[in-house]
Length: 183
Image (tube, rainbow, N blue to C red; front, side, top):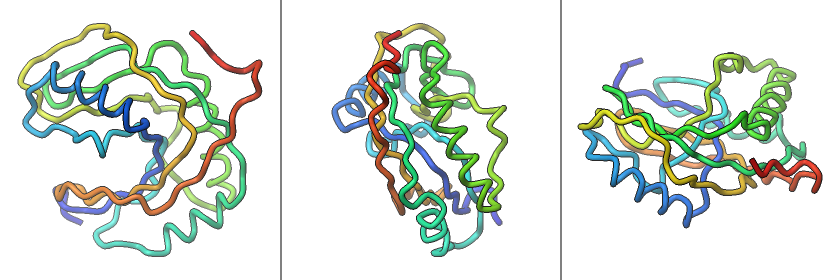
């Protein structure tokens, strides 16, 4: 498997189109980048399933079998901080983000029940990548940008080739009214 050209399968949440456009404006104001992430590819990764040297058509079918009609709760998700380092620029959420962490824990538990090992959730730090090799280093709060995550997707990413294909999606149910986190 070549470092600059391989296929990664991962689960993620994506912002709705209007929020992606707003995040794109933040990205553009904080740029330029050697390689920006386009609006249609903005996402927050929940977990990586596989990194392989060729497509594996069985992965979407396996994911459908593992997740099937299992119900996970959606959640509000807000990005509040810019962190542009030497190699990468990301947006970070504010607060503890119990919704995204609960979704990720439930997803990992469900997948582990099917014998699938994905990256250790204890090392998980929710973020959204804006671009690689930023021309400016920058760390600061931003005006919060957020959406209600109501779907998870399985993405086939051809790393090094700029291709992202959604190969599966599952709707999230609304949380009970008392569990909305309006922080």
